[in-house]
Structure formats: structure tokens, C-alpha cells
Length: 497
Image (tube, rainbow, N blue to C red; front, top):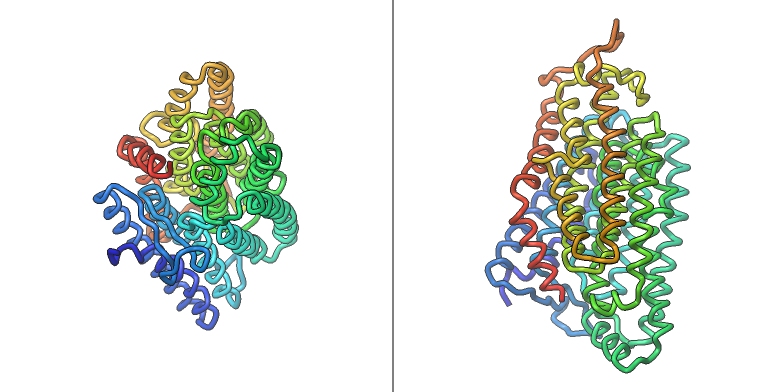
């Protein structure tokens, strides 16, 4: 086996052990370790992606060189490597963009704990991307949950503790349903490896055996991951979790954590159940309906908000709805649109949260819209970045959000029974997105009369401004060079099958 095939395993362990190392390091050293580890894992993922593109097929890595059931398996294809690389890019930029606020939001004695949680979170995300074993996936789902909860409550204010408790309750409910569904699936098939489960499920479907327990198992796993990824109406924990955590935590939680659960669901659909078998259960119709509802009600909740960070958080409910709408179409084209939207939303939502903190900093720390009047002039970089993110969310050409909505529209016209509903809700959601995002852009670029707040120059925030520039570049690149990304997604989903 080529040495590069070890890279997924190395990436998971490197992130896992760096968390342990950070526990005995001072804050500044832990910060350096965290940045270096994310960069190194990103580099390993990029090399792995190039290798997989050159060989044109996935590979399976036996941990400890023992096959199942004695050993564990990692599976890597172009979609897994690409997603791991993208996660590293977004996490690095999110950490850099919110670094200047960490001293205001978290006690310095807890900074190394913060980096431990980030490293563990990255490790769990990589494991969810690469693992070929369902029980291993469940274990890292729990690590992901604990790490995310810690990132919320490490900012010791009343609302974050309340948000963390609410998040933990809902997330553990989702984890319990996922585990319950997995136990039923193990009882039916006798396997934990995804490829082996898929073979057994295929035989059960072909023979018409245990159909009701099989559907119950699939439904429980889907509902569990829907709760954890905040699909409407399971989103009650999301606004406070994103709205009151630290800036970097909000960016990471909104862009990466929920996407890790969604990516696991994609793997279950393709590599555990089988795409055709999953569609035959009609569970896709339920996901489709809740996805459409999330697109509408998430946007309505965002319009009613008077807090910029909670508005961005409610916007995530709508964007998660887009992804599940694509799943519910039951076509390969719809799935490609959903995977692309995972990338688009991750890049844009992090940009919006990082930009929003720059606007509130020059508004006396207030997140109320009335106090944000003219903030785009006082912090020009944050104003431009927030405008770019808003235009992307609305779906303006040249930005990644436009490509997402175009792909969803193309997928919708191929599904006769769901075309009209998809296009209508897509149009309504776009109008609602424009209402609350453009309202905010107009607000920050409305000149304030006798503003008591001072401005901020590039010299005072070089790293912050550079981070915003990179975020905007990622967004624009996804918008103007989308075809290679779409081709990679198609190839990756083909490898899944």
C-alpha cells in the first residue's frame, strides 16, 4: 500500500493527540500547536486528494493491518479527502478571524482548554469523514457533541450556559436515536462495517425480509442526525448556541459541526443503506417536506430578529433546509446540489459571523440593528465582507450561493412530482433571504448622525482583515470556478456507490 494511504489515519491521530499535548501547554504554545496541526492536516488532505484524483479510485485502510471484525477500517475517496481539506481551511480561517476576541470572551487560564476542544472537534470531524465503521462513527459523534458543547459554554455568561444545556439535551436525544437505530441495524445484519451492512441490507430488501424493522432503523438514524444538524423543527437549540458562544466557536459550529453530521448521513444513504434502497423507503419525502419548511420558517425567524448574530443563526436553519430538500429529491443531481451547498454554506456562514463581530466592535459592542447604523463605514473590511456574505446567501451571481441555488433549480426540474414545490419554495426563500440580509447591509451603510463610536483601521486589525479577504476569496472561487468542484462531487458520490 502506498504510504499516502496512511494520511487519513495520521490526520485523525495527529489532531487527537495534539489535544492531549495542549492540556499541559501554556495558552500561547497551545495556540501555536493548534494552528500548526490544522495546517499540517490540511496539507496532508491536499496531498491525499491529488493522489486519489490521479488513481481514480478509493482505498480502504486497515487500522493495525487487521481486517474486520478484529480491526477497524478507514475508507478514503476524493469526496472524503476534499471535505477534509475544506474543513481544515474553514477551521483555520475561523480560528484566525476570532483570535483577537478570545481574550475578551474567555478567561486566559482556559485558553489551552479551548484549543483542546478545537483539536478534539477536528479529530471527530475527520473520523466522521473517513471511518468505514458505524460504531466508530457513533463514538466520534459523541466526541463531537462534547467538544461542541464545551466550545459553547467556555464563555462563562448566563446565556451560554443555558445554550450549552439546551444543546446537550437535544444533541444527546439525537445521539440516542442514532444509537438505537444502529443497534437495530446490527441486529438485522450482524455487521458494523458500512460495506458489509450494505450487502446485508441489499439481501434483506431483495428477499422482502424484516422490512418494518429495517425502515424503523433507517428512520431512527435519520431523525437522530436531523436533530443534531438542526433541521426544522429540531432547531430550538441553535440560535442561542450560535448567537452567544465565542466568535470562532460560532463560526465553527455553524459551518462545520452540523456539516459533519450531514456528511455522515450521506455516507449512510450511499454506503450503508444504498441510494436506491433509501429512496424506496419514502423517508426522502419526509426529509423533503421538513427541508422546505425549514427554508421558509428559518427565514421568517431571521426576519423577526433584532440581533445580528441570532439573525445569522436563524439563517442557518433555512440553509440546512436547502440541504435536506436536495436529499428529498431522491436524485443524484439533488444530492450533488446538497453537497455543494455544504461547502457554500460553510464558507459563507463563517464569513458572516466573523464579519459581524467586526461590525459590533465599532458599535459599542451592541448587536442590535439600531446601533449598527453606519458600522460599514467605521469598519470597512467587516462591512465589505458582510456584504459579500449577504450577496452569496441571497444568490447573486459570482458568489457561491448563486451556484447552490442554480444546482437546486436544475435538480428540481428533473423531479416531476416535486418540481413545482421545490421551485416555489426556492423562490420564496430567496426573497426572504434578500429581506433580512439586504436590510442589514442597508443598515450598516446608512450614515449615522453624530455617532459616538470610533472606527477601526487596517493597521489595528491586520490578521482579522486578511482572514476576511481569504474568506471572500474562497466564496468567490466557489462561485466563479464551480465546475471543477461539482465534477469532484460527482466523482466522489460515484465512488460512494
